[in-house]
Length: 495
Image 1 (tube, rainbow, N blue to C red):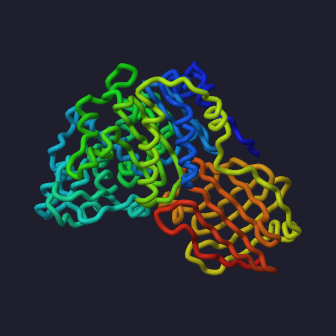
Image 2 (tube, rainbow, N blue to C red; image 1 turned 30 degrees about the vertical axis):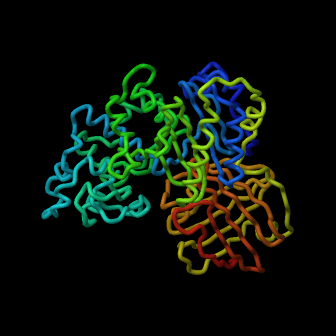
Image 3 (cartoon, one colour; image 1 turned 60 degrees about the vertical axis):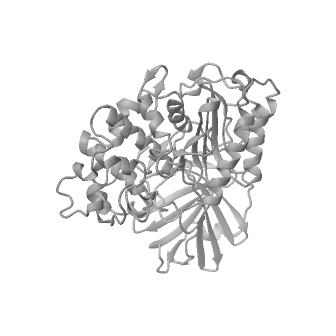
């Protein structure tokens, strides 16, 4: 089904009836809670001027959403991968388990896995739950979630294989492996995955109904990553901590936990899986590619973004700096009453993908439906094919996982689902099925270009097929990744 650009709820015109938003969060005009709409526009301008591609943002103050927007084709109802911002949800689950008396921060890690390590080192023997929470496990190097995602055997065993070279508590080493072990401990003490344990205790009370969390071997959620939520559900995490653990007047976390989790520990700017910034205004949940939940207790505000920006320290620091620079202007101590029409118009017309500009080629009829068999390649792709029909073109790829197809609109973007292999460009994520917005056009008379926006993630793939007689060269690249941004060219020949 072809899609048109959709409207999003504008900041100034957001409905007062919270049921219309679908997430039970109250809305208000910016000036009602002292938010400066012009300053929000300046924040968005600054992000754009620095080439930082947002997928969505929400700003809440005094408990109400004052500004929000989604860049089409992203939408409020879609979940988005949070990557390492997942860690702050994991810490939340640990806080609940501690409050229920199921574990203690000073418990040794090995206590929960009797018999898994025959002769533990003294450092491993000394490692505690608190060391996992503070990322001071004693490991020399951190482990990314992408390192373990392809492993089908026990990740608990993988954790215990890593040498603990330092005394726990003496070295900060950021690692998704420590977060995974927190999740594994919850499995051990509750008999449930972390997601299932948190569902009646945290997700359900907050009205978080569409959250998805990957499950690894032994029915353990990764802990350090793998959680996808809507932007508004991500915002709710920050709002609960801002309120000292309460949601709509009901405690879902202890105030002692929210204070301890967001206070600096060994490293100085890290609490219990929350980042605590030298700027006393803020602590945050941070995820790869621009997934941020900034909590500003002094301003009674939470700012959330989802995005698709490069994964490097410079970009993360730039996004932090822009947020810190503008938040005091967006949320000044005294109320403001200014023109909000400019902000309303901006958020109404946000989009990531531009309109498609159709372009034809006489080559389409000649190659449509023909199968091109691939030479041996690193991605184990066996064949590729384009089939043009009406206003769309179906791309089909066959590899060692099977056959995968994406329908590309030629004059308007098409929303669909696909099983297309892509873990090597997507930080090793490979869901069984992914929603995708897709479009294609002839960039040159002999080159067909396709854009695939995977709308529950930060990833946007660009795939090109360049034809030369009976031969085609297939190239595929991605906007953001923790590894290479493009794959080796695949050469294929028509049968």
